[in-house]
Image (tube, one colour):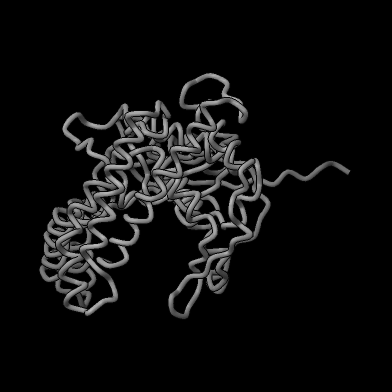
Length: 362
């Protein structure tokens, strides 16, 4: 019995015959729609795609709408990339309504329809004005950005017990530090974040402690900060550890700010990103490894000591980090790894002070 061939026919309407056929071909060639297997003067024939047309009720299923959201983002992004330069970039809503206006007026009059054409046109003009004003204000966000959607999985604390995860993160972090430093504008402040932020927060912390009668001795807190600075400065004079390098850092590295996706690791949430000691950035990550924040009762976190990195894991992390940063093999047993880990103990003091001030301010 001969095999049945199923085809779907896509018509290219009115004046856009050639353009619509071009669209169908380009989308099909790039996997954004059925492939065109035949093109004629006013329509195309596209390959048969076996599937089910969704019902309205299908969108009550979370897996359906998340799949659609991801597919639509890919369609928008890829479709824009592959569109020929000569295609009209005027928004379709403007192009089509401008084209339809005179026909709409004629049809309303001819058929004596219960439509006030002037009111319809006035509504269109009001819409354009409203949209243009909205775009002017919403494209210049004062305190936030909108970034592209990245399909992946936010890591859990337990994920870092997996050797492949921590080696991937160590490599990604080294690239982030190195590339972030290279691309940072010259005018960006190179003062380590731990100094900048604590200096900025100090006067506010003192006021908040007094106002709320908190169980903190502000003078002792400030004294601890001065002692830390002295200790760190003396350490840097005697140590050549790369942990003391000032590079562009993330500064809030923990599980919920790390996304695993098909191509590797993405870091997100750059509220505190800026120049800092790389040892501070890594020490902060090591120190947060056991914090669980999905707690609904005060103090809204717990700490699981079983998740703490072993010395072996820390050595592996640092060796991979340095190998990527220096572009040469660094073994966990190398002296530079031990020196780096020793420096992390000093930077850990700065981490504790930073988040103490943060806790008072926030």
